[in-house]
Image (cartoon, rainbow, N blue to C red; front, top):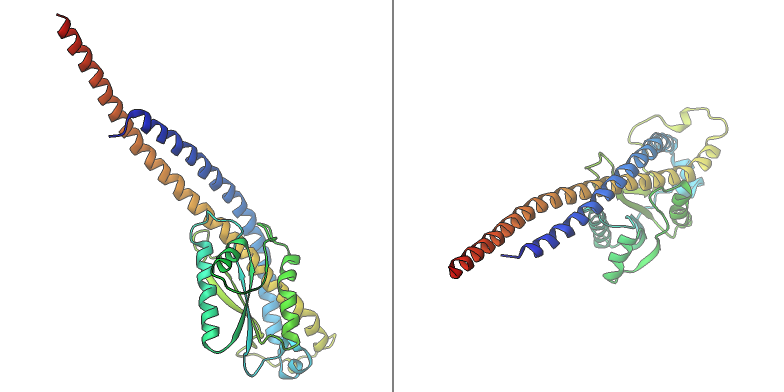
Length: 286
């Protein structure tokens, strides 16, 4: 059995660890609230743009606007992976990386030449360690992403799609359902999927002209879609971190209870031994 001093040192270490995890839990809770507010503000705008752009799609406009083109065959695709810059958030990053690997493998199995673009230190570190070729990366996007961050990520990709250099663009990010449910998902950003059913755009009279509207909306739609993915990722990261730190804090409390009992037993055994030695010494002097 460990001595009482050894157990006492462990108790002090676990208490310090619990203070850290508790603090991180409180910080994540505060950041989660702000992240959810940003996400709630971004979702309606992104959904409205998605429906509007899909409703305006027509083969005629696709000939005029390269961002609406639908390649007959996908030969080259880009996968944009969004991860966090920090850990201590459970399986959040590993789930995103696993989803990205699955999509990369599926595309490569179909004979598609794939290039990987990464946002976040965790995804970058993983694929660098495995020796994967990374076309571009950034680690500058923090806990509070801005629309300009989305522009920085997606603008080079949509320009290359418009010139025919890329045939598809996929985004891997988390889908925020609740603070404890943030599953990864892959979304095809380009080519834009036309609506399955709906009224043809030619049935409407638009002002300004439909083509002008489409030309203005397409970049905003793509930027909005990536910005939504960024804010959902940020909210998912903070939710996962809060859950992970709460679990760590609870586990530290359980360990402290066990260590305290062990310390009391060790201390009791030490006191009993000291009493026995005193009684034995007194008896020897008689």
